[in-house]
Image (cartoon, rainbow, N blue to C red; front, side, top):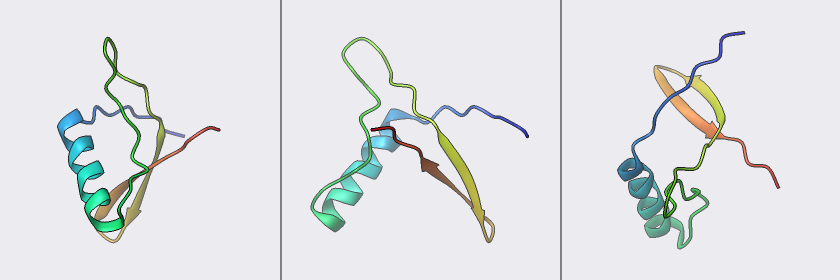
Amino acid sequence: MKISFYYVDSEYVEFLKDTEINARGFTRVPNVEYANRRKFVYGVIMNIGDINYYVPIFGE
């Protein structure tokens, strides 16, 4: 099994949050920026057609 790590720009995360709020009225995209650190987020990459999708895994 291959494990890879990716950096996701926080501006892109904010774009995703805003887009989901506009479409659904709420968002489940997690905050990744905090006052003094970035949150580590993990998930899987799914390939559908020619597009890779990131699917986060949330613990509760």
